[in-house]
Length: 128
Image (cartoon, helix red, strand yellow):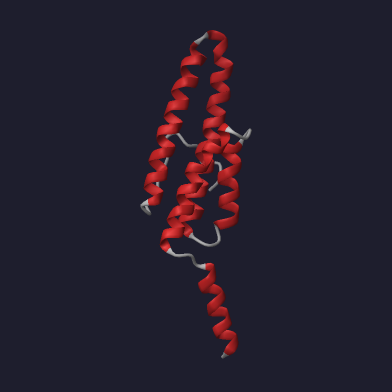
């Protein structure tokens, strides 16, 4: 009987309350702003959150993967636009991608904080 109670306590500790769950899901998205201070921080921050918290919540697991897929996709799109700067159009594309990324991340963070699962447009599903 004592073993059952101990297992239940461990399971309850693993489960986080809904407010924390939504906060961590939001941080998976908003954490990409670390990329302004750390090279590849836009990928590292959501990756660390996702790897450490994915077992604790299905919402965090889903939103972490979604954020990572979007950031990897945006990195690829940015590299392509950087190559296209040789023919000038790349500058316009880089600016458009930056604005698009910031707006989408803020929208995703707000949705995740309200407990909704957000899906980014133009995200390639690398992590399923």
